[in-house]
Image (cartoon, one colour):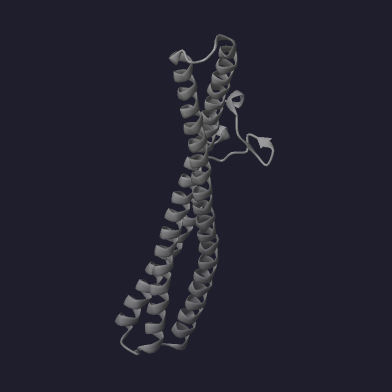
Length: 201
């Protein structure tokens, strides 16, 4: 019998609906993609920050070792030993400080006791997100983007089935098959996209 006008109108309305959902999911996915980029940039920034603290710590460790070896060598006059010892204690204190700052940069302020906060951000303590947390944020949003992209693919397939329905003028059986395929892929695409956007992060 072929398509009726009513069938064509319904399919057209469905195509419009799925195209609208597709556009919305593309916008939401774009927001998540920006969050991935931001998290990746923060990872690089925190990695450089952690690296600079490590270099400073190593330099102080070398300075401590040099002063201790100098002290043990017996080449230093007794009156100068207290000054050398004070400098050794100062370098040890800085080494511990850099170690604490590295730990906070790596783990984030929320993951260490308040009393151990050592690194400020813009003059405020307790504001460090942490390198590992930025890595987790990046991974979570990347998974979300990938899942929403899969949902978008099913929505695109659904729209394609809708176009096929509008083009063909076959028997009712073929129309019913493509209509079922359109509904199934469209609803699956919506479900995957919503799950990816809402629950993957």
